[in-house]
Image (cartoon, rainbow, N blue to C red; front, side, top):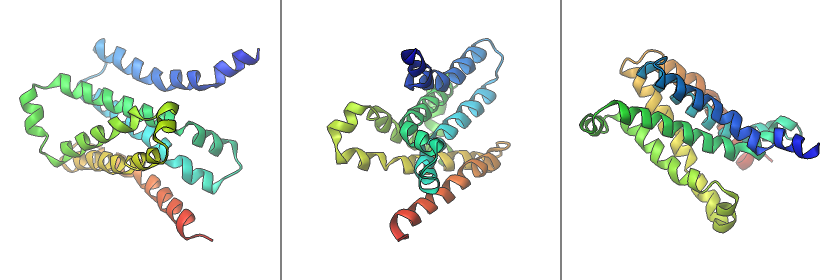
Length: 197
């Protein structure tokens, strides 16, 4: 009974819950139920939301240190970080499959697209070193590497916001609505950790 409870509430269940939206998106796109614009919007938003959840874990713990939610977020933030990369990868795959390589190369110098590519490539080593074995092997260097997630977050925000400036409907509003609260929470984290007595 305890094994079943552990399975239903443990990491495998969390992985399943995080994967289901991506599986459903891909199946619906393959069936023609989503247009390209729809799938790009949805995968991009899911990537951002997973990243945001991983980033708010520490500030939430600082604000509410004794709550179970804060402890759960902190304990599972690596899962959300890897999920953010997985949805970013899915987002990138749909983009690459949609256009010829020449168009992708030409667009890559545009700031709105370049920032997306930077976020994607920063995510790769972060995701690859998110295992317990990597944490143990890298020691203090693991935390230093994981600090690059903030660059990925800035680039993801810039990518989303700049698409809005180019006329993509709802992009600027969506970027601000998702990332401004995270920025405020991160400022609180810095204040609490560096300046608060």
